[in-house]
Amino acid sequence: MLDNISILLQAPIFAVDLLVQGLLIGGIFVLAAYGLALVWGVMNVKNLAQGDMVILGGYVAYQCTLWGIHPILALPIAFVVLFVLGWGVYATIIRRVVDRDMFTSLLATFGLSLLIQQALNLRFGPEVKIAEAGFGTFDIGDLSIPAIRFVGLGLAAILAICIVLFMRNSRMGQAIRATSQDPRAARVLGINTDQVYAFTYALNAAICGAAGVLVAMIWNIQPFYGLVHSIRAFIIVTAAGLGNLPGVIVAGFGLGVWENYSGFIFGAEFAVAAVVGLLVVVLMVRLFQMYRLRQVVR
Image: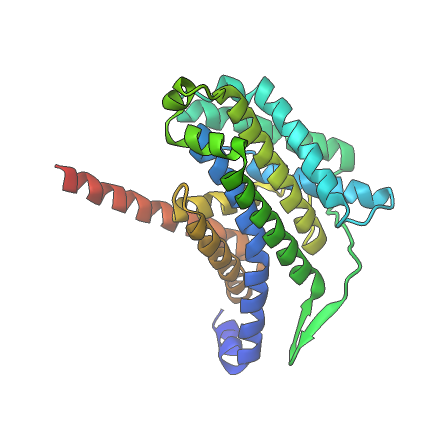
C-alpha cells in the first residue's frame, strides 16, 4: 500500500489520470442513484434490486450486440424495455409493499434481486460479458483515457438533463413532485397516486437500464454484479439526502474518485471492500447527525 502511495506522490500525472477517470465514471453512478432517490423519496421504497436493474440494462446492450446493433443504439432500447418491465414489476410486487413498513419493501426487493440474478445466470451464464463499443483512446498530454468514458459521461449528462426537464415541466413530473411532498394531499387534489407510483418505479427502472448500457460498454457485466451497484446508489443517496439533486451529483462524482484511488492504493481486490467501508462511515455519520438533532428537540 505504501509503495502505491509513493507512486502517486512521485508521478503526479498518474494521480491526475485516476482523478479524471474517477470523475468520468462518477457520472454513471449519479444516474443510477438519481433513480433510487426518486423511488425512495416518492414511494418510500428501499429498492435493493437497483443494481440488478442496472446489470439487466447491460445485458440488453449485450444482447443487442449479438444481433449486430451498436451498444449506443441499444440505450433507447434498454430504456423502453426496462420501463415496461418496471411497470410490470410495480403492478405485481411493489404495489403491495408501498404502504408497508421498511422491512417488507426490503424483503420484496431483495427477492426481486435474486430473481433477476438467477434469470440472467440461466440465460447468459456466469461468465463476464462486455458490450464492445469499438472506441479507441483519447490523449490529453501524457494522459491516455478510453474515449468510451467521455462518451458515457456525455450520454449520462444528456439523459440526466432530459429527466430533470421532464420532472420540472411535464404534468406527470409535477404530479410526482406533489406526491413526494404529501401523498394524501395529492389524492385530495385529484392526482392518481397509484399511477404516479407506477410511473415513478418504471422511470427508475428505465434510468437503471440506460445506466446499465453505459456500464456494459465501459466495464463488464455479470449476473451477480448488481449488489455493488446497489451499494454505490445507497451510499450516494444516503450521503446526499433525499431530494437533494446537487448533493447526489457531488456524492456520485466523489464516489467515483474514491473508488478509483482506493482500488489503486489498496489493490483492485479491495476496491469493493473500500466502497462498503465508505457506506458504513456514511451511515455512522448520518446516525450521529440524527442523534444530535434529537438532542436539540429535547
